[in-house]
Image 1 (tube, one colour):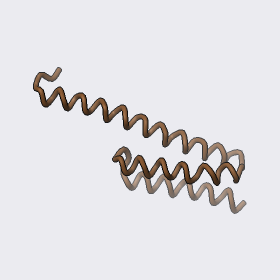
Image 2: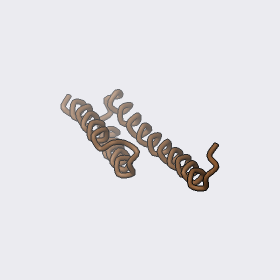
Image 3: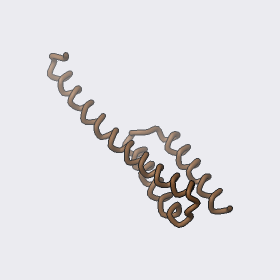
Image 4: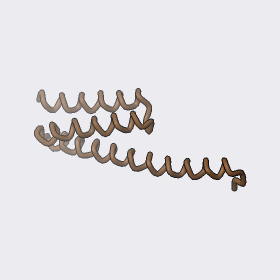
Length: 89
């Protein structure tokens, strides 16, 4: 257990950041799951609505520093690729 004032503050900050990061990651996972479910069901209309929502959450998580920018780009690219395959079929 930390005893210095600065170490105690750092522990509080770390916990707050961890909670925020978990919440943001959960939102991203939920949006991606909705999109993937729409793609699995071959529901183009739902997927068309879910794709921008998922991309928006991924970009928000990137801008908050929760995920790396390359990870965000990769996720967006793969989701868009899946959606385009659905749309073209």
